[in-house]
Image 1 (tube, helix red, strand yellow):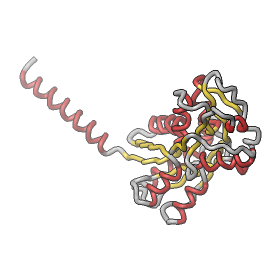
Image 2 (image 1 turned 90 degrees about the vertical axis):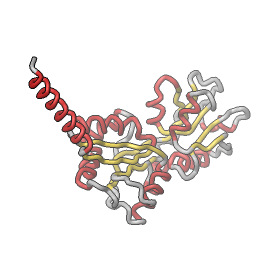
Image 3 (image 1 turned 45 degrees about the horizontal axis):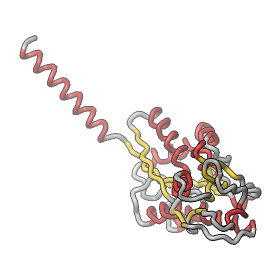
Length: 251
C-alpha cells in the first residue's frame, strides 16, 4: 500500500467524520416540555418520530405542569408545551406565549400502594387511619389539585406526609417503601408495573376529577414548522394509539 494511497484513505475518512459532525450539529431540534406523567409515552413517541424523520431530534424535558408553564412564561427556549391540565396552559396562552392549545388525552386518578399492600389500604378513607403514611403532589400541580378534590369529595380529612413537586416523586417514594400510599394517575400505576398495587378510587371517572392534557406550540419556538409537525404526530392516530397503550384515555 503506497503512502499516496494511505494519505487518500485518511483524507477521505477525515472528510466523512467532519461531514457527520457537521450533519449532527445542523440537525433540527424540537424542544418539548411535558408533564411528568408523559415520560414513558413521549419518550417512545419521540424515538419513533426521530426514526421516521432523519436529521430531526425531539429533545424532551419533564416536570410539573405548573413549573413548566412558568418556565415558558419566563422565556425558556421551549418549542412545544404539553400540560396535564388546562389551568397551567391557560397561564401561558393568556401571557401570549402560546396559542391554539389542543386536548390530546385524559387521565384518571388512582390510589397507589406498595407491593403486598402491608397496611391493607382499600380506598381513600384508609388514608385517615393512624399510622398510614400517604403522599400527594403539591397543590399547584394538577395531580395535587385533583387529589385534594378527590379527598374532599370522599369526605376524608387526612393530611399527606409530604407534597411532592410532581407525580413521579410520589410514585418513587411509594415504590421505595418511604410511604404506604400515594394519589397519582392511573398511567403511573401502569408504568410502575409489579412494583406497586392499584386501589381504584370509586368515583375516579368523575369528569371533574379528570386530568385534561393540552399541547401547543410556544410563541418562542425556533422551528415552528417542525414543532407543529410534532404536535400533529402526537394528535395523529399513531400518537393516540401509543398514549392508549400507556393507559391514557382518549381526548
